Image 1: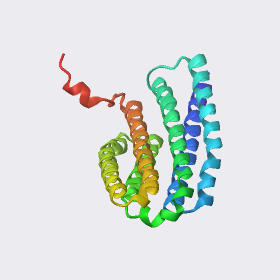
Image 2: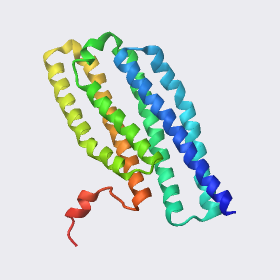
Image 3: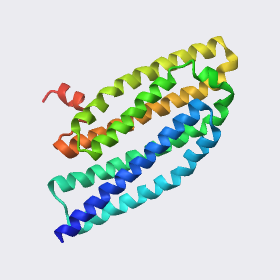
Length: 224
């Protein structure tokens, strides 16, 4: 029975890693499609979403079955709790990849304007955050997870910078209002991408170190 339970946990982690790899592929392809103006690649990103959703359902069911039949405690319980949350974050990252891909077609004529913004830089950082958060989970590495958390402010600052740049552009150059609006929405999608990577990193720290780091700043400032 113990061996069967361990195998189920191994299978669960394996499926999470497979889902993470698929989402990683989606994000890579979405960025390639956006900055390379490749509409066909964007369609591939959208097509992959069905497989991501299938993993989402599978992992949810695996967690529910283990909870119901094994009544896990300690580290095994933390793995299940983290798996449920990471599964949700990965599914949302996949959705963001689709959202990015859906903006590719209308921005193809404005690729040169897109490159005048810092969105590529912002997307590259968020992209690394996603990959590092997944690697932190695979290798039980809270140090790498902490590095992901530290990158979130950089992405937030770039999001604000891009927003200000685009507002000025729309005011001074009305023909660019439509592409600027698309890019503004894309910037927010990338910011959310970094947020989901941060959430995965927090889950890794909880899984490995049994520490809850979410809202730490609020907790430290609060008086008892």
